[in-house]
Length: 361
Image (cartoon, rainbow, N blue to C red; front, side):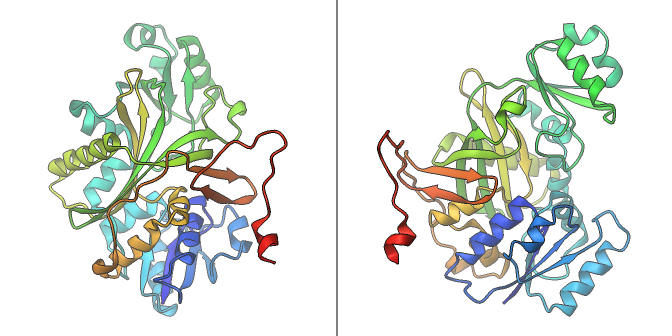
């Protein structure tokens, strides 16, 4: 079976590919990737059978190039990962089978500003304010918004904390604005001090068929940022939390009532807890996130389910949700494949870990 993975050099796409390689339902996959190749590491990692460099999604030749590729490579289905590509194909219609969220939903979710405005009356997002560069460099902001707060860029498709700062006071906010000269407007949002979650939801024409939640606990290079939060986790855990599932479903339903659409495909809803521990939505991703591979390692393969849905093999989807031990852990390192352990215990002084591969030898 010949399957296309877009954005193939990215962290999330590679997590999807690793998950598909773990699938027992798809042991005959020939995986073709496309990417703009800004991260050439993915070209030579060896996860995919073939990777093509393609034009950017904003290039006038992009659509014709992709249509030609699907034809010449005889591709049977695709999983689209980069959000700007999801946005494009949700409206344009992909030349081979895909499972994508509806177009108007994507237009709202891809923009933090539109998302927060759409959900503002539902009590699902933090307090926020949109400010120009001029507003943030004068004294009026001090009177109109409570610090500390997040100040961030909110352009479409941004991720990994681009242009974001946890500003403790207006003076630090003005300094950040000065340093980020390429951003004209900023979003100020309420600081949420609690835990950090994400909830995957996979939909089949309005029906939720998969739920998968996890918690982010520690971050790569945390000491290099004032907030201690960066775009990628070094530790996390798979969880079961009805609060964030209910809030995710409510947010999706609220948006769809306004767009008059039916939900399909996969999304990942990000949360942080407020001071009172209420989880509030910080963004909605129109794709898998990197923890997809950890769910697959735990036996709950979201990428496999996504492909089964795309191919119409709904009877093979299996249970909607899995149950995880409280002591499970996700471990990630810069140069290694992510590890998931079902029952993690801190190693005491004098303790040791055996090399299981050596034992098998």
